[in-house]
Length: 190
Image (cartoon, rainbow, N blue to C red):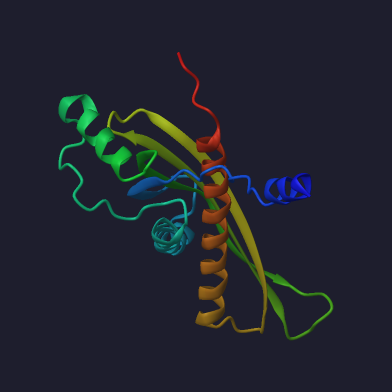
């Protein structure tokens, strides 16, 4: 009987899942590479910026605001700032720059339908994170997405908005997965 009780107790012991690290990302800017055509770059830039800001404020691993943070992260070689982050349970903080490396919009005729065509929007981004404090390279990530949407012979504004927003959000999600995978790797001591 005692062994049965012991087994029951041992069976109910839960194994703790590894703790998910928290980070703070601050967006510095969203740039459009010169290789991207100006008209599609102008279409992509505000959408990518909105998608990245939304991701930074809603992602479960990101702390959007740092209430009470030291005003100068570089004071005392960053020790005060690092202690602040540790006290808040944040592994590290980064200044993040996003580059739009690819963007295109194309209308493709649909062979099987006479009065329809397909709107194809493609967005590619590169994300670079620099540590706060110190401004050393912390991570990079690339993401891309293509959205294909069937439209009529006349493309409505809401069709373009839907396709561009969807491509931007998916590209940002794709890039952030790469970033978090890099951040999850153990840091190499030098």
